[in-house]
Length: 239
Image (cartoon, rainbow, N blue to C red):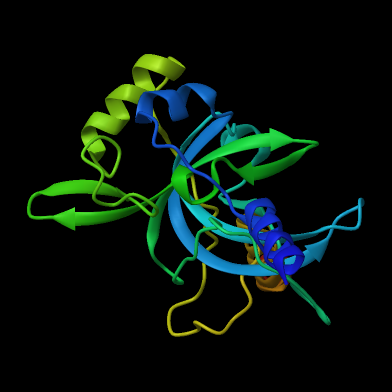
């Protein structure tokens, strides 16, 4: 019985995650990237080493360190340990939970060409409007006087001072659609323009053809009129 209790305590210690609050400045300094965005969806995947991970997809609005303008991306995949895939279910304490559409700030690390959520839930902040202010609330320590709640403007200033760059606005890829056709599949603007030009090409050809026919009849009429004029002149000379 004593051995069983010791084993359970040891297992709990291995599975538990200990978080120690640290200033927001330290998280900004240690992160490879920071972004502001909205949570979209998630899915569990099997990594090369056989472990489970959860991919959480976010729509970014601002970022620093991710170079979204070079890669042309406005969505980012952030990995967290654990997940549920088939009959396997691995729960890791401290992994944040999100509601679709909510606005968040995440600190991330780049490991083996994958983005991982830094410090799990401690590196995750929910963005809320509090009166006239925008406030970041930490998911693990919301009431901590030091790191629990951070004014968003102060956060932007800290990022600028430490990273040497402002949070950059992410350019979302938007394609034109016709009015009243929300269900039409979107396509790049260049393709849309090419199709428009192609659809107008036959009309342009018809106009050129019509113009050619008009010139032909004009020449024919003028020639006929000229022939009549010459005939009248010849008759006058004979008289």
